[in-house]
Every structure is written in structure tokens, then in C-alpha cells.
Length: 433
Image 1 (cartoon, one colour):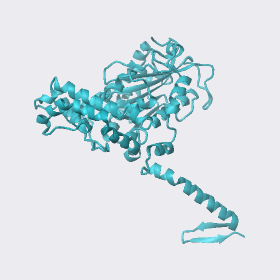
Image 2 (image 1 turned 135 degrees about the horizontal axis):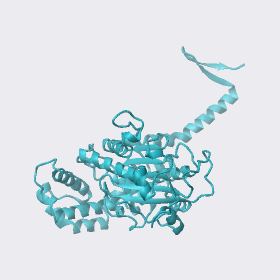
Image 3 (image 1 turned 30 degrees about the vertical axis):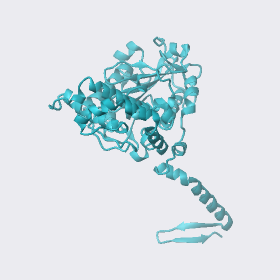
Image 4 (image 1 turned 180 degrees about the vertical axis):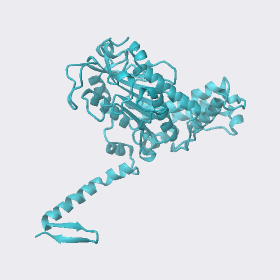
């Protein structure tokens, strides 16, 4: 099913994974991790998906064929008021954001005289990130995850996987535990990637060859897909990002700056993507990402369509573009040069699908479907995740006391008619006449 010829694409957002990187170690029980750097292959991957995004949404020569040109960016040129890039605070995501932007907005699509346009990338300190990396800052989730490691389900899977785990002893030096298997997979996968791309000349080990390699991948997919499934995470890890996306969709409908940018990039991690989908509470068969680790540079795309002709001028900020229909569509792309696959949303309807394409919902239906799972403020997230150490959570914790103190100070001021006059020499108390 394709969109109607008079549909206008008002907004396109991507939540993409970073590109290929060096090996990364994660603590099995806390998810604390070491550093990892984007590789040349990873740079090419994120640049490539950025180029693909440009061809689908920005390049008039190609996006007019698919009727997916984003309205309001003349000739697909960069416009700082209409583009926003947001990244987690790690080297690999910041570098991936920059690579994606270079693919989406090459120098000839900007006003720069330089070989590449310098486009701002907004980031959140790692320890304070409740938007992109809520998964390793949420104590309640970490406790739930560790309880799952002790469950009968987990024990049964580990027992069933013993032949594979035991076979890896010759390569690893010991039999790995299932709760630590992501580290096993990542180490093998990073080495295997380097060998297959000619960056390393050592031979593939038996664990990196078939049939063992497919079994390693399947077990890693099971572990990560289930770690971030709805029954373990609820909306704890993706609810804040879901809320921000809902705010942006509504802002575009009423042209409310500054949230009304037309192109939004989130440079993130595969747990971000899986957590976002879990927060949406999609059916298990809605997307392949519910059953596997998204490939490097994989994307989740969110589109907002309307039936207003592109030539119709914007309403004044804050006023709705009345009289038009609006629809939301979501797609996945599992890495560079792979197809865009629509997600069949539970709220999909024929009218919205006629407007925006397969799997689409009307904007109002999408909001009604998704809003109950959105977490609207950091304070609410701190509370449901039981985070009492993040700076923002600590500040919110003490806010009632601060408010009470301020109220008390105001009452004193009204009673005594005194104020504090701070001078360069000293602080003194003065009584007004």
C-alpha cells in the first residue's frame, strides 16, 4: 500500500544505532561499560544510512519518486531551524551522529565553504542520561534483570544451551555463563568482523565459523531481546524517549517552536531501540527488532504525514493547521543498504494507511495508543526507576524542602519587613523604614 499522491510528509525522525566499533565490555549485572571507539567501517555505515535517509526524504531527485520528500526543506538543504541531532555522550554515538549528518547533509546541500558542514550535536552527560540510556541508569530495571537471571526460565535456557557453551571452552579458556554471554558474543563478533573486512589477518576460530557461529548469534539475540522485552522493562527504559517523540509530533501539527523541527536524529544504542519498542508495547510480531539485536547503524524511523498541500503556508506558531488529516508511520531499517520495513501499528486504520502508507495510524489514534506508556517528566522517571543518585533526581528529591524553605523565608520577610543587602564588603541585615 502506498501513500496518496497529495500526502505531505511533515516530519521524519530516526533513532539509529551507532556504527561498528571496537570491542566493548559490559558488566553482566550492572551494565556498566568500558569505552569503545567507532571504526572506519562504523563511520562508513552511519554515513551510508545518512545518505539513504537523504535519498528517501531530502534529495528531490529520489524522494519525489517515492513521494517521501520532507516538506519545508527547499531542495533538501540543511536548515538549522529545522534539523536537530541528539546523541548519548559516548564517543561511538557522537561520531556516528556526525557521520549520519554528513550523509544526510553533504557540503553541497549546505551553505558551508568547507568540505563538510559543522552541524551542532546535542548530548546528555552519561551519568545523567534518562532519555537515551535510561537502561543503565534505572535501578529498578537492573534489579528486575538480575532477578530474571535467577528465574526458572533463565535456568532452563542455560541448561539447554550447555552444548554450545561447553563447545566454546576451547576458544575462550572456560565455559561462559549465559548472563555474561553478550560479552562473549561481542568479543567474537568484533574479531570476526575485523577478519572478514581485511583489518585482521588471523584465521577464524571454530567459534566464528558455521555451524557454531549461527548458534552464537541466536543465543545472543535471545538474551538481548528478552533482557529488554516488555515484561521486564515495561515503559521504564523507553517511556521518556517516547514522550519526547510524542511532544515533537504534536508540536509539528501546531507549528510550535522549538520542538517543531522537521528532521530529528537520535544517535543511540540497540538497547535504546529495543526499550523504545517495548515502551510502545507492540505485538511480538510487529517488527524483527523484537527478536534480535539490531545491526550496526540500524534505524527506527517515525514519519508524520498530512493531507495539506505543501504550498499551504504554516499557521502562526501555537495554532493548529485546522481542517487537515494527520497520520503517523513507523519503519525499521536493519543496517545500511537494507530495505525500509513498515511496522504494522496496532492503531492502524485504512484512512491513515491511504494517507501515509502501510501500518500507519491517525495522529490522534497514535497519541491515544502511545500516551499511556509515555513518562512525561524526569521527576516521574526518577520515581518509577527508584533513582536517587542522578543529579536531576537528587535535585527533584530536595525540591519540596527548597520550596518549603522559600515559603518560610517569604513569610519571615513579610513579618519583619527585613531584607538582605549584599555589598562587596559584607552581608548585612537592614530594616526598612
